[in-house]
Length: 220
Image (cartoon, rainbow, N blue to C red; front, top):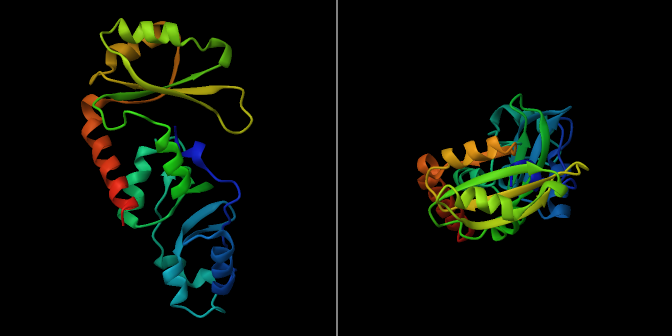
């Protein structure tokens, strides 16, 4: 599952012309502790409730734009990347942007918890492959044969519908093998579209570290 798949379309944003009081009101209404500052489509940074409470309610938000950190994920980053971001910046809301800092949306801790709850075997060694496919092309039997033919097995799998009205699905596979190169090559030979892959051979320790950071964050 990628960052773009977790976006909550109802999360508000604020503009430079808005006041501190307006932002605090939105935080109270939506039960948020952070709000993205977005001018036009450009992401300018993230306001925290504690920062706003230290300023006058009549102040405009644009006065503080140069003081803001800009924590964000790109749309195609895996949800595991959110663990480190939330921990390092101590935030409860993550903006999702393009590489050019254009704002796409945001998601909160609850969405991340729900997403990670759908992934079993996350702490076991292995890698992740995300397949992009039409529902009619989905055959777990064939997919399992490809993986088992490379001396590996599926630890966990789940299907999610791609956002934006797409008819396609993402099939996320957690595989017990530490090097997915041969499996990826086989999927390519069978004309599967790989949306993303996260190799345990180079990234498993990083995945574990991010997971541990996330669990520490939840226990704060």
